Picture 1 (spheres, rainbow, N blue to C red):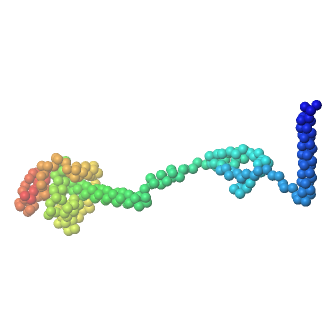
Picture 2 (spheres, helix red, strand yellow):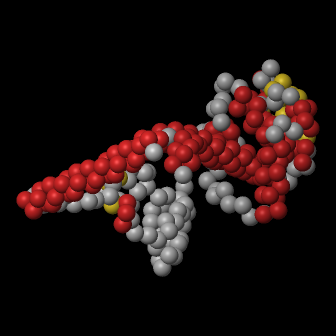
Picture 3 (cartoon, rainbow, N blue to C red):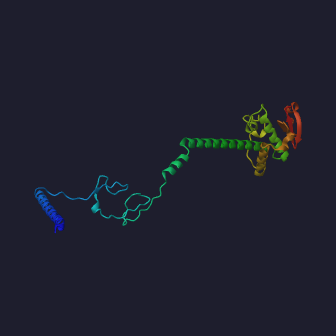
Length: 268
């Protein structure tokens, strides 16, 4: 009998412990009820988090209740608006074609400055004016030589015409005569019968009546200016006259050759 006493004692202590614990918890609950009557209950809220992700649609100072976070439409990203929200109802806008800033800067860098363009234009314009002026002078010189050939020797052979042209060109090189073809051809033409070539001061208009002969005279003038080698036989001749006249100056010059009706002379 005595062997069961410890067990009975332990059971009694366990029952007493449960009773005491139940009594204490009941009193504690009553105390909390009394406090609730005097003070308001604190609101229970869920944790709050600030969205700081790049490209967020929320303002930087806004907060959002994670427990009531609504489901929003999907965000679409297009090439013209990275991070922009595009409504599916709006559709994707057309992409405008633009030059990249780097390409624009490169194109501008390749464009010459204004001052360089202006200087290039001026240089080309000056060269053009120079070429035009030289061409006009050349044409005028050819025309004067062609007139001398036409009026002085159009009835002569091609060699005779080239010889007359050579005399004029030799005079251009001689310091005792003008330095241009036109100057040599029309030297003294301001006085009647005082010119070097009779047609230039005979008082008759220099009108071309034979177009074929004139065209041939222009060809002879061009060949003479170009340095045709067939007139080398004239050498340094600076004078000539028709064989039916005897000018006084001829006896003081050296006779070179006779071609057709013309006799050619040199100063030395």
